Length: 164
Ligand SMILES: O=P(O)(O)OC[C@H]1O[C@H](OP(=O)(O)OP(=O)(O)O)[C@H](O)[C@@H]1O
Ligand SMILES: O=c1[nH]c(=O)c2nc[nH]c2[nH]1
Ligand SMILES: [Mg+2]
Image 1 (spheres, rainbow, N blue to C red):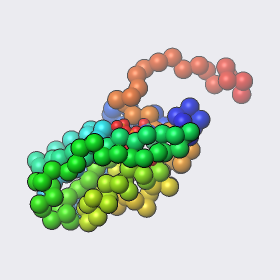
Image 2: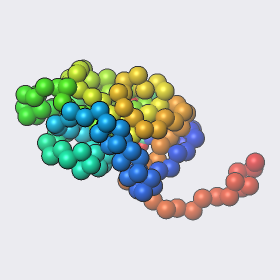
Image 3: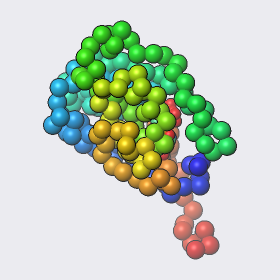
């Protein structure tokens, strides 16, 4: 599905910060993490918030790109692998962070590289939820989450103008 076919779930910077902090609270009660891997690009912002809250200073990225075919999720390609610093440490201590899990295609690729790491996202949709260890808010599969870094203030037509 494309963003325009779906229910809109707009997230402001404040709401995202609050939800990323809520994720950090949950992760702090689990504990034992010594490094973070941010799944680019969406995972960069929540990874920064969680790193600050948990006092973690070893932060790596796994850089992925996914290609969409006919409204379906296509291949997820790794553009930059994990660093040796991450691969050398016990993977149970590694926290992988992304902004959301939708179909689970991205999480599946990353999990295959770090099967024992803890995978956390701020938001989750039902299809991808089994791929995530910790998340904050679930939204329905037919919802599109609009993140603050992708959006800006714009005019919204009144509901009555939609012919309701
Ligand atoms: O569970 P999935 O169906 O794989 O969808 C979730 C992924 O989709 C988005 O990333 P996207 O590939 O759009 O790229 P970006 O992070 O660079 O924005 C999001 O940041 C997740 O990484
Ligand atoms: O900004 C986004 N919002 C979403 O709901 C979503 N699902 C996959 N990829 C996504 N990107
Ligand atoms: Mg992403």
